[in-house]
Amino acid sequence: MIRVEQWAEIGRLHFVMGLSIKEIQRRTGLHRQTIRRALRSERPPRYERPARSSMLDPFRDEVHRLLGEEPRLPGVRVRELLSELGYAGGKTIVDDYLREVRPLFLPRPRTFQRTSYRPGALCQFDLWEPSREIPVESGQTRRGYVVVGCLPYSRAGAGALVFSKEAPDLLYGIGRCLGRLGALPETLVWDREGALHAGGGHPTASFAGFCGELRVGWRFLEPHDPQSKGVVERLQGYAETSFEPGRSFANELDFQEQLDRWFDERANLRFHRTLRCRPIDRLAEELTVMRPLPERLPDVDRRLVTRVPPDPYVRLDTNDYSLDPSLVGCRVELRVSQRELLAIRLETGELACRHRRSFARHRTITALEHARALRKLRGGPAEPEVEQRPLDIYDALIPA
Image (cartoon, rainbow, N blue to C red; front, side, top):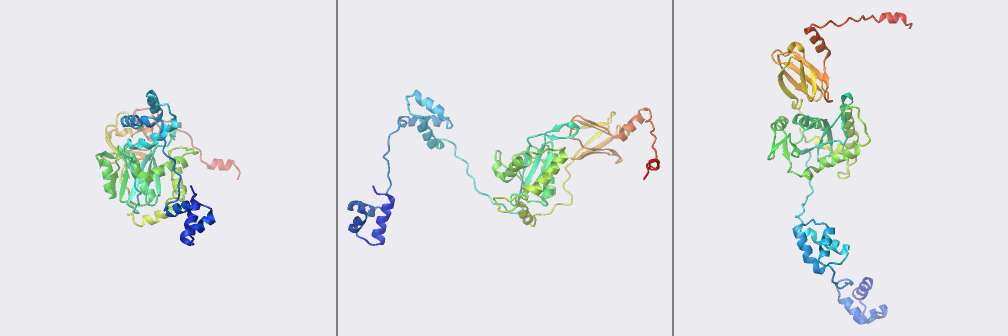
């Protein structure tokens, strides 16, 4: 059998240079019949080994039956069952055959298509849970979540730390991400998060109201379909490997500050291999076609009405916050944001309390003026007066 190089040379000598078979025989030393066969062949010569029977051949039908009953049956178990029927072959033969025929018995694999995004059309959201708990007050730590938003066209992203999966916290996170990105997309894309999805692809009342105030649409993905928002999934994975490792946080405010800085200085400024540019460069283009943010984002604070009890405290998230004891028995409206707790008397608009919100657990937070008012109402002893010396005395004693 001649080599491929010889076959090509014979064709060149005959069809290009016009040499006869006799002359080609003289030059190559090959037999005339070999030369004639090479000239008649349109394909390069190829050595084909005749098919040989395998020790597995008598058991192929049994393999098909086993895979028909359990398509993912491990190869080790298949060999064990075949050995009971007399199979004495090796592992490689069975594994190679299973690799070839197993896909015929498995469910049809899902197919994907590449997606292109229009500027400003979508903003994908996801909820990321950091691997470590976030430090809060009183030496405590607490499990936190980060609402991550990403514009698929520019790949620009933002994040907001929250401490629950309830609707007010998630809506706050969405609003903060949109504020950091700087404009409104046409549609907000979420998976079926319980606080936002009411079932059947419909939004909850709070999420629908939020989107209605912003004049944006919403879209919920099908169950178990994270690939449909793969852009934000990849950004979240990048945060897990680039932002969180090797960092320490003093409290929740420090976490948020470092996260904002990471997005501004790292995630949105890096060179994106798919885009072949930086997200911040595409964001500038995308913002020109997006609607501007409203002057004020929708109000997502928790609101509830209660009466000031004889023990003038209100409990929120396991913490007790003091109220003005002079308003015992009056109805007050509580407004809870991510940063403070505010209470107003309904009838007169008097301030019942204003506390900085604490994300630690099981604390009692008492304002000094409330403690003094309660002491006075209960007829407690007056606070001792402390002499306050004028500072000019120290100026006279200490030479300039």
